[in-house]
Structure formats: C-alpha cells, structure tokens
Amino acid sequence: MDPSIFKAYDIRGVYQEQFDEEDAWKIGYACAQFLRSHLSGYERGQANAQSICVGRDMRTHSESLCHALIEGINSTGANVIDIGMIDTPQMYFAINHLGTCGGVQVTASHNPAKYNGFKVSGLQAKPVGEDTGLRDIKHIALALIHTKGKPLGSVEKFDLTDAYREHVLKFLKPKLKKMKVAVDASNGMAGKMVPTIFGDLKNVELVTMNMETTGTFKHEPNPLIEENLSELKKAIVKKKCDFGVCYDGDADRLMMVDETGRTIGCDLMTALMVPYFLKDNPGATVVYDLRSSLVVSEEILKNGGTPRRERVGHSFMKKAIKDSHAVFGGELSGHFYYRDNFNADSGMITMTHVLNIVGTSDKKVSELIEPLRRYYASGETNFKVDDKQTKMDELARLHKDGEIDHLDGVTVRFKDWWFNCRPSNTEPLLRLNIEAKTKELLAEKFAQIEKHLGKPVEE
Image (tube, rainbow, N blue to C red; front, side):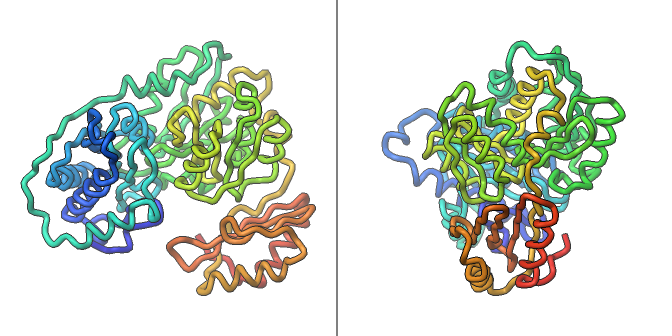
C-alpha cells in the first residue's frame, strides 16, 4: 500500500499500482475500528449503530474493492449494510436514514478510469478527513501485516432508491413552467441517478448524454475543465435547452451552462441561489469558500443574510454550516451544501433547487446571471513553489497596504481588486485566485504577482 493514497479529505490512487484488494481489506478493517471506537455509550445502544454503510461507484474495479472492503469491516465484528452502486450523496443520506456509525463509498470521483479510492464518513455523515480521523485510519491500515480474519459481522443488502428519490424530490416546487434541460452524466453515477430521480417529471424534458455506467469515460468526469463541457454546450444550443448541467464521476458536484452555451461559475451559482434561500429563511447565514467572487457576499448582504467566508474543502464547509446553522453553502469546485440535507453536499438536490429557480422565473438563465457578472476573475492558477510559506509571507509583505487575513493561505483585499494565494495540501504548489473590477486591472495584477511566483504550472 502506497501511503500517499491517504489525502487530506479521502483515500485515492491508481488501482493496482498504489493499492489493491488486499489494501482495501486493511482499509475496511481500519475504518471499522475507527468509526466504532468513536461512538458514545448512548450511541452504541441505538439500532444499526454498530453497522457501517458501504457503497460504490461504476468503475470496473469498484465492485471487487468493495467486496474486499466489506470483508475487512466484517473481520472487526462490525456489520455492513451494502447499499450497492450509488452516487456519493446517497451515502450521506443512508448514514442518517439508517442510523449507522458511518459509511465508506468506493469511488475516485472525477479522476480518470485507472483511479479508485474511498470516501469515509462518520456518524451523521460527518466528513472524516486527515485531521478528523483519516490519519488514524492510515496508521491502523499500514500497521496490519495480513488480511486474515474470520468475518464475524453480517452483511445486509439494502436498496434505498425509493427513499432517496423521495428525499431529493421533497425539495421540488409543485408548479414549475415547462423546461428542457441538457444533462451530461460524464459516464458517472449521474447516468443512473438522474433518470431515476428526474426522468418522469411532467414539466422537465431531459436531453441526456454520456449516461452509460460502464466504468469508461468519453471525457474525463471533471466538469471544472472547460473542454469537458463542449458536448453539453453543443447540445444545449442545438436542442434549444433552457440550461444544462454536467456532473462529475460520483455525482456530488455539477457545473451549470446557460441557454447560450456559456459556463456559469459555481460562485455565480451560489449568488443565484442566495435570494431563493433567504426569501424563506430571512437573516440566515450562507457559507461560501474564500475563492468566491465578491458578488456572493454582496448578494447575501443585499438580501438580508449573514455571509460567512470559509476555508476550501468539504470538511471545513460542512462544519461551518453546522456551527452557524447556515441554510446552505457553495464552493467554487461545484459542491453545494444544504442544512436540510444533513449539512452535506448533493448534486441531485442542487439540480432540484436550480429547477425551482429557473422554473418559477420569467427570465432566461443568461438574464438571471448577467447582473451577477460584475467582476473579472482569473480562475485558479497553480504555481510550483518549494517553500510555500515563505512565498505567501513575501506576498503579504509586498501588499501590506491592503486588508490581509490568513484564513486559508493569504488573502489581501483592496478597494477594486483582491487575491487569495493558498497552499496545496499534498503537492509543492501554490494556488492563486485574483478578482478585479476591470479586465485591464486583472491582467495588470496577475502579471505583478506572477513575477513573484514564477510561471504557472500547465494542467
């Protein structure tokens, strides 16, 4: 087992090069040991509290890895509820719906087909990351010498499709105008879940592509890469759709494209949803990641809400939403989190809310978004830097006349522009985001900071 597969938020690597089924057994054993050890005395007595949910995506090796993972879990005496081939957000639903002590989803999300991995969640679907248990799981798994052990726990198969569909559609408004929506499932789990959840809605006509879940991808299942949206954009224009969405591999994230074929940044999607949520939740908090456009905080304040900037990453976002009782939160990566979904993210619930917004408006999507395009953003650019902290300190000194904070890396704000430079958790990279009031100012400030960071890393 290559120790580097243990990342900041999950376990992920190249199948058979960095890990295999034997390692999946060890990871299952370690997950069960960790998850069960963190139950209180009261929680231990609850039904299903000693059980762990297990699910998987559609990758060709996910089933065999899942089987090995389950055997490892069972060898600790823990019971398993196998919920089959699902999208990752269904795992968060299952843990809460069934009352288990946690769950493990076998998936590599948006990575190419040769990758796989494990997303671990604890009680109430709380994320298990490097600082909240993944480091302990790593230590247990790496210390195991063999994968022998009598499976003492039981395995129960459970199909939650109907309950999950009901959960997602409870957020759908009853009276929506007729819409035609293009969906690119990226040959991922949205290929199974979108038709199941939205396929028979009377006022929604789906134009679908890349729905096959064979474990191979027509394009990389990462909607953040613009070229991966090209097929969707052509379909939207050709079929005269009201809008389109592209999902990632495990369907917890999506990108939105308007009726003209123009990509909508996820921070603008957050801003679009602000008045929709705050209308029924006056004064509520909305959480957004600190790379987001200023338009997000402006819209929250304009609509009487409380803005909360947060560090990048789902563990930080989910904790912030819970701690502040926020109604929802948005991340630039395409994750959208909801108070009424256990503070967890969901690509399917996001689509439901977008259908509500578009379906109750007399404006086209491009018309809804245009007022939000008030600034010019660089997008996230990576720079290879060995001494990350020294470079960030240098940037802070060079811009000491601005308003500085260190919530995640260094953020400096001026009257007409701002930037954030934050370190990668796993690589010698600094990630830069700049936003300005004019295109010219953006280009000028990017060039200035680029001088100090070097040439950008090619994707």
